[in-house]
Length: 460
Image (cartoon, rainbow, N blue to C red; front, side):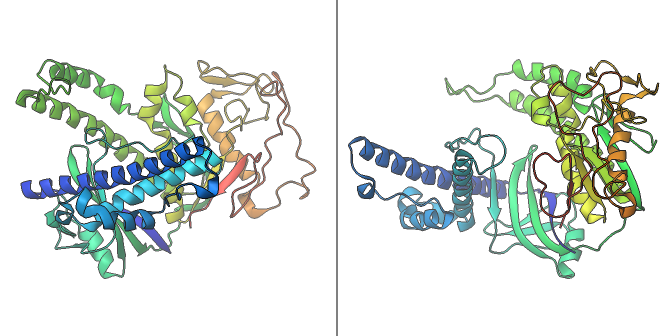
């Protein structure tokens, strides 16, 4: 199957190449700020004319927000705005204008209500101190040179910290590099190649097996098939003491001060670099652990069931926000989404309101309340007593087994007449607000209508 993959490599540029990389990232910022200034001036002019009572058809023409229109205007004035423009690749300026066009489009769609997710504000000017340094190349000389070098437009031949032989073999087999993005990240320069390649269709080791995965803080993942749970390594918590000590060392040095123009001392730079390395190590350990967990699940099971967790809402809990961020719930689901498609499986996401923790996996009774401090689930109806996370994982797996396993009808009579509200047991319904019982219908292809408690994410 044809897939789009990213290959990430750390760069080892020379001093001259570092200066050129920084210049390209600065060019991206200049083009973005210039385009944003043009858009803001046009909007302000039209708003001022409206305040004077000028009719709409006689206002100053609106400025097009498309990347092509902005780039055309830039090409006419780049000699005045940036006389040094020839020192960088044209892709740097195109990258900045493309990002501005995307930001404006996201703001407009968010304001009109056609964009999902939280509200997006109007774009702001990028500053040298806070803006992420990155540049994207889509045309020009983008290739590999040997096993330890890459070639980028204007930048030339740059050495890498690790071999690029795996990507080189794919290119010889017909893969194509679509773009390359260079970014300053985790204290060094990295390059990421977007590659269109053919991937062999794989089959999980247990294609008919269904596993429910319940994510948590005390234990990172609990599984429904009885396999040992995945412990939460708590990388950030483990490194907190070291980070605290390094932060104190940084605070005792003469650092930069924008108000007085004071430059940082060499001791401050060394102490700050040591602190950054410790933080980057935490991120790398977390990323490595999540990749190993998700890869093992995707290669073993044909169907994986997870919950649609409201991570953004969970982070509002100031007592648990740090631990939730350290666990990486969102990254686990993101990786499972594409790895299950690569390995011939599928990811099933249970509805956000499906009471996996409050439902008895034996008799189906639903508790009204189940505080987090209660780590053992005890059913007053059938007497089941087991770990609450394992109970939730079993409920997630059974949600699919009732409908998918065996490819039989959705219900016993095939018409849905036997889908009733689960028995209340001791405690009644989950909440006082009436909800539809969590049905077990499955949709393939397009996203389901609102209200369904289950949807399948199929990776193309």
